[in-house]
Length: 219
Image (cartoon, rainbow, N blue to C red; front, side, top):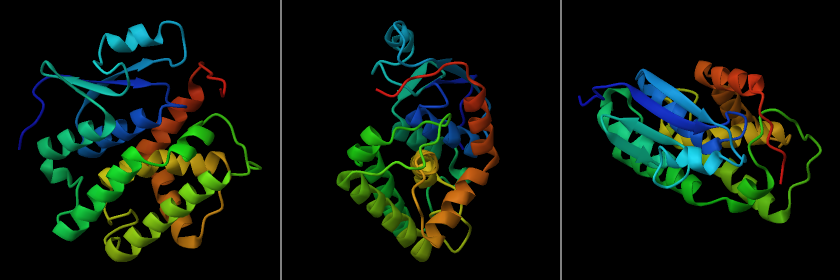
């Protein structure tokens, strides 16, 4: 097993708003690796300069360990899966693993209307929000992914592929969006969302988010 040999530092944005940071943070929690975190407030005059000290892409999250910097949430999660194989971040079954990679990649690259119109915001609730047709289509597709993964591969636990893994890290911020904007869910999707929200790591992240002094106004 290959492990990080020195202190690991994860550079993240505000916990109330930074969906990509949440994904990498949950992955580190899942593998049990000790790490420090540096929180950089977003949407401030010095934000870009502060992030640039750590991340060559100018974005968060970035993971720094042993002189190596890994940026981009999915790249960080892939690196964790390689370094901590016993954590089972990808399913062992090849078919399940192929689907898990597919749905993780779809989340990584897609759903732009949902990202744009329903930003992650753990500080507020907008229960009467009416999604646009494009967002409604994204919601329907995500719900379909959740139902399919749970039905085909979820027998071993409450998450998309049974045990918690990378696919769940990728969709956890969407769970928070659905809570924030009062998106109605069918029983299977509701059970999955509740399982994500009940994770101790998710509860810790949310508590930290609510305690943050920074507020980023919707733009």
